[in-house]
Image (cartoon, rainbow, N blue to C red):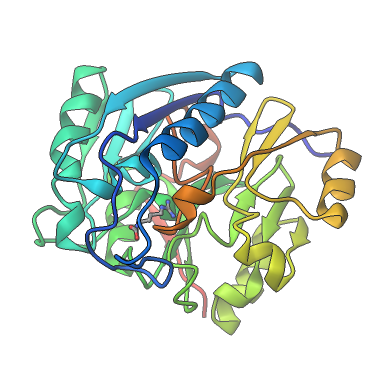
Length: 290
Ligand code: ARG
């Protein structure tokens, strides 16, 4: 029997006052295709409102003028309901200043801060790669997060971490090919991973909802579940039927301005209420696909 997710009711979002494409660090970005500031703000606000309408809470952080990708708050750090946060150590230098503001925000809001690395020293970790699901913290590694960071997470917090190696360059964070829906269901796009990790993925998710190429590249897995609502940037009729069949209310929003830099509903929201209780492993444990 599936149960609702234990997290996903409290989010941090960054108001897109300085969203631009100044550099290219993923295949979706082009400095020739800039977002429209007015439409950007309108789309962002529709997401904030949809979360509130679904019974969720949103905290808003101001965007640094020097950090155009900071709107993708999912990458600021991995935060738990009991007040712990693992700060991201961004793979690419232009995003590292975001962590200065994120560190202040998390400590200012009572979170005890951990960091796998900073300023290019120590393993990279981007929190868009990490979700609690089943008995572990599932972490995507390869394009952004490095395998070494998984060890850090496991040991520092005494938790079980399962790694999935991402090999698809268009799916550079785990939140692009993977979206937990409830305790047993998740949207998954297996082609994002190497063969061993695909097998591991099907071991982790009891009831996988496998996306087509078109669904995956419309960012369908970059969705968020808030209580019984799933907020999505795109939903095919096929997916709609599956999700409503699970008792979910499907809300589809136009977030296309944010697709220009390679992110959507999930990337724009950082859950603040992950629960590590079910994934505790004294001393820490890392399971990598073999
Ligand atoms: N331009 C951003 C980057 O490449 C997009 C981040 C998308 N965020 C996410 N959680 N997938 O870093």
